[in-house]
Each structure stands twice: as structure tokens, then as C-alpha cells.
Amino acid sequence: MIRKDIFIGMFVGLIANAIGLILAATFLGGGDDFTTVIKNAASEGFLGKLISLGAILNLAAFFIFIRKKQDYRARGVLLITVFIAVFTFVFKLF
Image 1 (cartoon, rainbow, N blue to C red):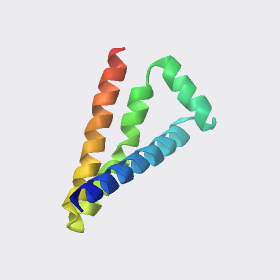
Image 2 (cartoon, rainbow, N blue to C red):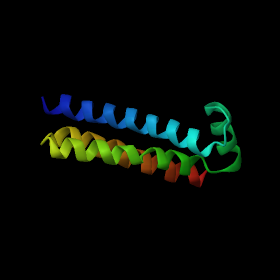
Image 3 (cartoon, helix red, strand yellow):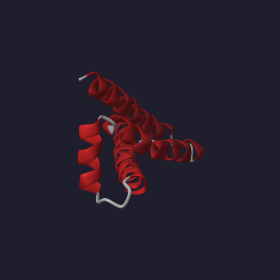
């Protein structure tokens, strides 16, 4: 039961981050489609910042799970958020 809740939280965190990334690319893309914005972000070196902006929706998911007293699901969202932070840090290094 605990593992299942943590995996559900991780899945929700990944989906929230993906939706946040799509929204950030749409609003900040200047009218271009998603793939063009991602390619331009990668070539100009701000893809990590765009991914980090996408992780803001994880904050909402985290607090929704905390408010509903679903602590293990909130822990899964937090794990994904930390993973994304480490990923963007390593991505910026190389």
C-alpha cells in the first residue's frame, strides 16, 4: 500500500511536470509549436530553466496531497521534484 501510494505520487509528479513544461513552452514560446521551442531552448542553453518552470505544478500537486492527508503520495511528488532538480543541475554542468 505504501509503495503503491509513493508510485502514484511519482506518476502524478511526472505528469504535472510534463503539463507544466508544455504550458511554459506555450506561454514563453512566442507562438511557436512545442518542438520548436524545445529545440531552441536546447540550442540556446535554457532548457534546464524551462524544465524547472514546468516543475512549479508539482508544488500544487504536493499541497493537494498534503491537504487530503495522503502523505505518501506527497512524498512521491517530492521525490520526483528532487530528481528533476538534480537532473537540471547535471544537465547544466554538461
